[in-house]
Length: 477
Image (cartoon, rainbow, N blue to C red; front, side):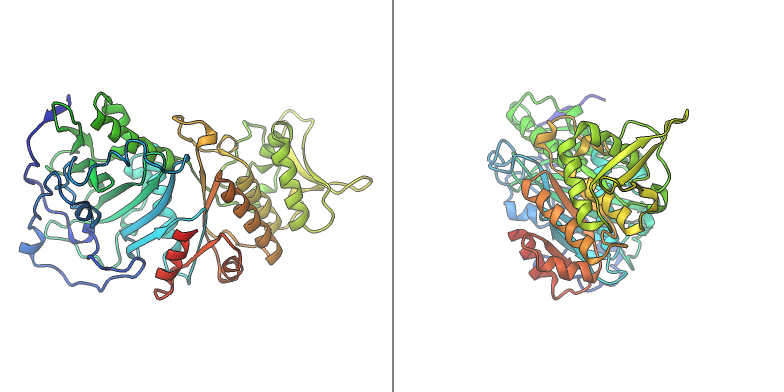
């Protein structure tokens, strides 16, 4: 169906109201601190729709939280300075991750520094933070909700009660900083009884540039509206309810008017930043065997580490040399270098070895300890770029204008103090240059060491009284 320009004001909501768990946190709520649990809302209150946001509304009203289904593009202060070429960083990066209602988190606003480490006891929600970021990355790359959230019921907030229609869901979002200025993306997802997007909003400088809302539950689509300008203030069209609308904007918006160009600039900035994500979880037992020859792109489990080392040895000698120097500081015994040897058989399997120096036999990586293997894999990720990782980076920008974000759960698992210190040094080096950012979950030992390192932001998700101070520290860094 063709997009229909619409010059009228915001239409009244005809679809169901957004359930309680989708709604934004109360004003004045402290980021990172779970609000007081509320009891079930009366059916009449749960079904009442809030007043629509009129065009020209104050920016503070939009920032308070997205009333999905009521946001209208064009509302709020002008975004000309933000979404049309603000003074943001050259490389688009996610500067804040919001888990408004996701797993154990309620109203969590997590500023992201170049190196952000999450700590806290088991059950504090570290893995949920990483899962939210990875899901946003998958959606920005065009994945469906089913692919991004394979177990959506596990992401519904704890003790969240269903509304009168039996619906439950979760809310996540982020703020992306870049050449277009800070751009907010907020997403509300219904997990039960069916997985679908019920609301999405893209905002710059308090102005709603793009918004979707579930109008008719019987249809597998949402009503999208985006700022147009020129002869038509707003354009409306149906979008699928199982994909991120922001990722589809470049395919649907022509960019013929200044308003459309602001929408495109904001959407493309968000997509570029979110797609540049690599989730890494090295599995040492799978890294010991010789790797079959391939394209030399490191997989998530790093099982093909030997094949990737073969490629970097010949194509990227500078980074390969830096990796060898890191191995000298973190591997037992003398390390003269890293090499990869191809077998003479038909399979051509590749075996990686540590060069122990002249006159000494090399050591196959399969004989190294689990901590040494995990260290080598994580160090390689921090020292390399998207071209050597099994990921699909955005093609809109050159690699030099993209910042890779590495996600790692259990970043310090199996590592000793020396290996942790070297990995932290590499992460801070890469983060300081702006090429690679790190968001990882670590234990108390690694977190304590990172707190002493200038430039590393440590957030303790298990201690609410520490969260506001540590989040402010992350912003400053």
